[in-house]
Amino acid sequence: MYIFNGKFNWSEYAKNENITIVVPASFSLNDPICAYWQWTDDGEGHKKANKSQAGVISSVADSVGVYRVGFTFESYYHFDATFSDDFSSLTLTMSSPEGNLSDPFTLPLQYGDSSGIPSTSVYIGKLNWLTYAHDEMVTLVVPSGVSDGAPVGLYYQWTVDSEGDAKKNHPVNSTFRAVIIGDNGDVTGTFDDGYYTFEATIPNGGREANIRMSKSSGEDTSMSLTQTDFRGLGTKKALIIRFGTGTDNGIFLVRNMLTSHLGFAVTDVELCYFDVDGQSDPKQCTQGQDPPTAGHFKDKFQGLLSGASAGDVRFLCVDAHGTTYPDNDLQQDTKDRGWVFADDTDWTERSVVYDEWISNTISKNLKPGVNLTIFTSSCIGGGMLDTTSTTPGIILAGCHETQFNVKGLPVSGSTLDPWMYAMKLAINNRVRRKRGVPSYSILFNEAKRYIARQLAAGGLSPEYKGPSPNEMTPIPYDRQAETSNQDPQLSFYSGYIDPDSERFLFPLTTASEGRINEDALRYPRDELQN
Image 1 (cartoon, rainbow, N blue to C red):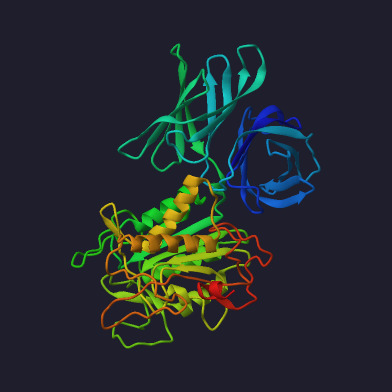
Image 2 (cartoon, rainbow, N blue to C red):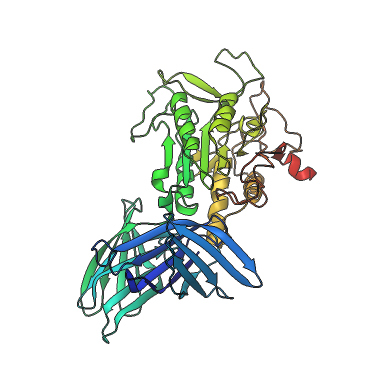
């Protein structure tokens, strides 16, 4: 991620004002980009009005060592940006549909790393400090969470500084120290610029930040900031549903992965589950969530898809059993597979949503250019897209459709699905090592390697058998012994996505933009053959 900060002018509305450009991930096509500035006068009589903008990079040009990008905010303000050879500065011009054009302005780089992880959070507010700052915009940028040694940036201008200079920028590029996590989940971290000390508290949930600014002589002030960043675009949405597999915290680990490291807003990740789900106890939803019924799944999944446009990302995570039986009479119907959810009227009964309905719903509602990613631990996932009609999407399944999965990984007193935990851990490791969001195929193989290491070390329960001796020929589950191997599957249409180049849960960038025109493929079968 990258932060640029400096000055700009725009007609009579912004005169020598502070502006911050934040690139949360990288400079690739469709990656998010944000801008924060203060109007001198916004044209409606508001002096020093804060302005925050979020969008995506709509054009990229890389030729003869010159890298340029373009982006537009609110279909109105357009920016053309050119990077210096070493990416240490960014020169921009700003324009409007009426033909207004700013003079070029150059912003020095304040912070940069090549991790490409969209973990950045940005908060804006106002600063008042003695006689030096009156109602000035302040922008807090937290690139990778609040922890000891983690980077942090704070950007504002003085109304008039101690030397009499008006509108002088004061960028603070520092690191957190003395980080404290409260019992309620609130996080407080301290940083400084060598003169002023800043104590930032981000309440549990991360939607706001409070900063206490002080200096050694005793003066202090407080600022209340609101989170305003690329997550507000609403381009990434997720549905996570769990039924009949226990009450472990696996689905919450997935939610945290999405919101902390992959650019999803907390409000754009919906969970359906029973938090009371014992064998004999009545099933309950005590946290205000909807129950994981078949009807709720259908309504929410259809809404998840129909509201997406080209460049958006949709993620479905299903922690439920799969079945090849049409009902509870155990008479096998090999033509049907489905996920098992709670019945709409009687939560103690089961109801199946079949693959035909899922395929038809995707085909009818998913627009070209939308990244639909499905993650499932159940047995039907590997074959979900292998239907009689081509279905867009990409699926990461914990086992082959002829097998069943087992929650067999002990973690902190709970037993988790190894496939779900392996995916989460692979992303966390990428964040820690600043290696960027992996492609689908890299994530698939890193998760498989983690499971293999756990098997070799005896870290999984005996019920989890792991991959077949030859994963090209998955061994079906043993009905009599009630045991099964687990061979993860990555299923997709090559005309829809290239899993070797597309990043996990990022907008599609390939030329096909999600249009299907080739055969269904799956890894490892087609990966090893090619």
